[in-house]
Image 1: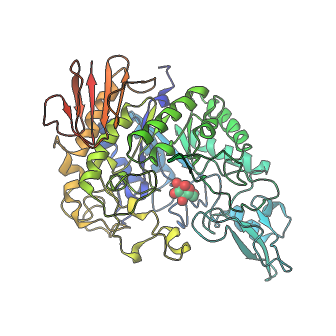
Image 2 (image 1 turned 90 degrees about the vertical axis):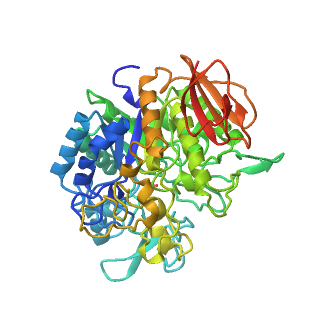
Image 3 (image 1 turned 60 degrees about the horizontal axis):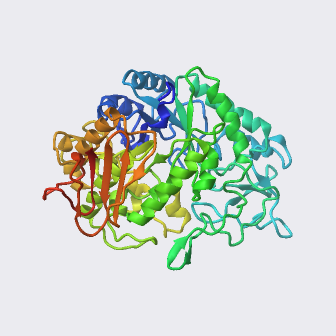
Length: 550
Ligand code: GLC
């Protein structure tokens, strides 16, 4: 591997800061908490951490509404704390990625406040997407675009003269006005913000909703165009329909922005890296973000959203590998993040190409999650770990209504519970909340932790060879030591339908049994690591994976 290309096979751990570790006892995770847990992360064996937004924010969307991109939210710490964390992480051999939010700012950002105070047509308004409404008095939104969190994507402002006036666009919450990327000043400002953090030693950025920045000229209605496009049934199988352009997702012009950003990253001696959060379903469209002069990597959401079924996983893996190979970029593999239900709970239900709602069988979901991580870490390229998945945390599906904070809950008129269930603070030690998340005698954690999490703490799992945590540690250790793992290629081995089985050179074999019965293991190979018990010689039980050495 070329020096400086660490990101081609990196395992990156996602630190959802508000729920990772609380150093000052206010019930909200913070930088002091992360610093105190760096030894844990280094020992786990990951290469880097990605920290969700830590900038000053009114927290209308858990920090994705940024009011100052060059500072740190006081509840998380100070700029000096951030610098200390970066230096200490580096001393532990961990790289640090931050999260940049370029599609929108907070409505409290000075730019938006200035836009509200300025008249229609002004330069201040032009940094955002302001339009006159439809209808005789402009009383209807300018078009039919919807907010991701529910309701219209437009909000009407009261002009400085006290009259209802223009509307502004927000693809997310009204507190997150979309920025106008046609404006050169906007582009220059974001590049300056990247440099601000790169100059402080940050190794890279995750780019929030990277596929949304550019909007189609004239802002035409979306009509019944779906995103992502719903698959259609052909001969009993669900297939992707032909790709058609969307007025505000994945516009071709967005790539010009990332070519510029790449030049900024490459201007550093130790080049800095990007990972795109682009919810683009077609592997061919996703691969465009990781062309040689654009971003380094992108999250693979088609893998994350795949059901635990051999044909679906195999199809996603093959498409991903082929499309990334075309552009020479390493794929990444991700099972969970702070926006989706935790995979233990997703896999705890009957699997199908279409979502199924039924009670969760957490034991089954956990067995599958154990197998899934061996698959994930054995695939060519890089991987992401979302905090708490190494503990096997399930989704918390019974949070009381009155603690829910995701804007989707209110915006949907209480029909969507939102994403709080995967954001519950991490249990570190002890038998009851806050499980070492906060120091003793602290304020309650910002979301309540279940009283049943005692056996899931880091402390309870450490040293237990059957625990999820020790499985992650063992797998990451082998991955680091094995020349076969990380970037490269794989060769499928045909075994039996319902098994995913592939070889990687030199001498590595991964077999995942996703069928309903045990399968035979090849004779001439020795088991390196198994995701679960192997009660019978040379037999792999269902929902179990093994790594073998030939
Ligand atoms: C991304 C973030 C999500 C946030 C949204 C708006 O999808 O991951 O948490 O709500 O962007 O910024």
